[in-house]
Image 1 (cartoon, rainbow, N blue to C red):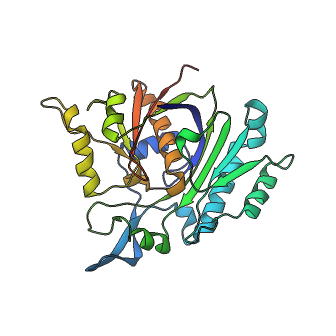
Image 2 (image 1 turned 90 degrees about the vertical axis):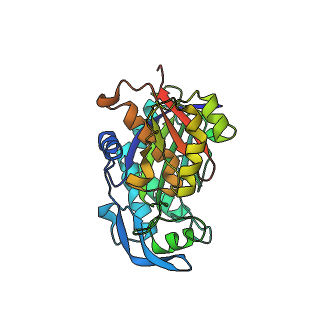
Image 3 (image 1 turned 45 degrees about the vertical axis):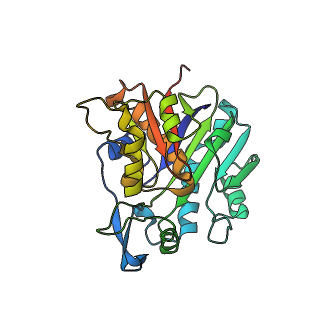
Length: 301
């Protein structure tokens, strides 16, 4: 098991930019999704509109422009220069998407220009990567992630590998977009415990029960629903209702390279909301690229 202590600093998605609106959207199962105008090939017998979630202000823009605008907004809001004066930041990590031929959607040149604009005194050293394991994040790391996964080219390729949610189709992946900034540091307000082994072993290690609160941040499908019940059915006692997960992806869409940070930010919105102060912990569940359980609880700092 790996532990990290963190604070979610700022975010942007279809629900807005505050923890309160994020909690409200997911807890109340608000739907921001809509069908695409273009059809994708689902199987040999079906072409249908795919379901996606977009930020209204970014409508009609291409993927690169969407990501650049979200990143600019994050950099403007979190004020890295001030943050570096009040908290130690030894590493700046950008989780940014790549295109179909593995070229960064936001080039290093544009990224450097954005940093120079918002931190004109001294541009910090940084790393850009399309993915990072939560277990590899070290203390004093500022992590910033953005992605937009709603373009026709992205979803049509995705549909060749997995079940995408289409209009009147079976459960599948709903794609979205968003940006998140998270600071991993010893004085953070939340702890995340990342378990190892099969998901059944992880659930056992975490002493999970059917009465715990679960946030699902993975790829939805009929196959996954059956697997989740198989993993959890032994946790039920007679007469208990089925576990009802709060679903990030169904409400706000799966957000690609930003999805793990989206889940941790969602967990913070649940644990820091005045309506849910009685919650001691929540569990975030991922099933792509790997099946992963993360327990998030308040730290003692």
